[in-house]
Length: 415
Image (tube, rainbow, N blue to C red; front, side, top):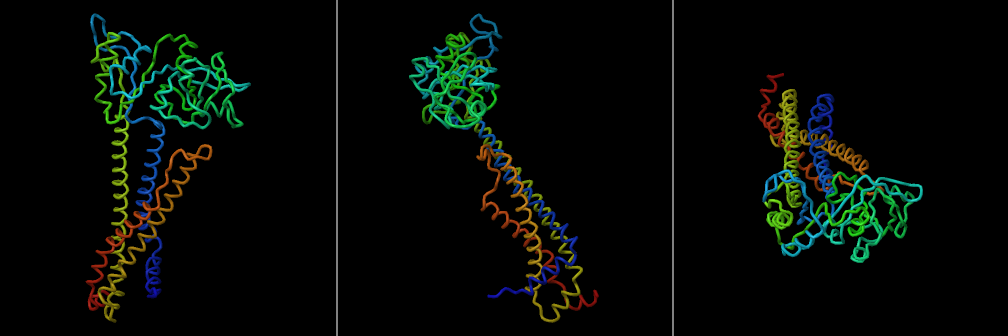
């Protein structure tokens, strides 16, 4: 079946007859679609950026650290400072069988790492090989810490991405080379590109230097003290249900009230991920609410303008009826004009939103790798185009119904 070119020419002629009106009417649809697509892509990219801060985190993990007590206990007043020790790791392993991995950490900030004549800020972190099962590293070169590093207190380290870029700007594998941190030389055994830095507080991304905790205790005279203990539960274990038991084991060993939730901090990452999911469910709902609301306002504007156009073309429509045009032909003509106007404006909005999102992606590219995908997928764009077409058809129904009701005699009288 050959397309009716005369019909398309007539639609184009009608829409371009009053260019300013058509442009302003289409802008409402253009802006509504732009807002919908841009917010969808922006929300997706924002989610990825936030997720990157917790990349590699086990979803069934908890972090435990000590703070000032907030409750009196066994003769001790509240407000007492206390700290965890390395023996707490064994206590948790033995007394909480639901745990799978237990990894202690000690950390330090404000250090300086040097290699040759280059230097940069560094944040040494002492931990055990088990920590890689709690916050999974992204090894770009080399390996992570192992049990031999621990047992022999080897002076080895895994450096973060930023330190690697600063100390080895020429690239290449730095494994086997030695860097100096606070007067001690460590041999690089790996480069970790995971920028989340786990639960390192106040540490700039990519500046972590992971060292065997046994070596770090000796280097910085930390004895048996531990700043944080990271744990993961066995399969099927809900970590939030273990929090009271974890506090009880730690509290009894340090004469701290097991009910002191602020004195013995237990942070469950599953709560964090649930919060993120809830947050972005709300964000997605608002995106669709704002986008579709704006698009609907644009469609209503199209409907109103088409009403005005039908009123202006009363005589023309009456003459068509007089020479044999059926109501169905009039209906098709008006709805086609409405669909074409909304579709052209809507597709322009999609293309403009895609172009802006592409710029955002380019701005979030590091080393040629995208850190977040802001672009919408093909089928989302097709779905938006379908919504536009449906709204264009609905916007043309009322004007088309009015055009169908025009009688030739009334049209002549109107003239």
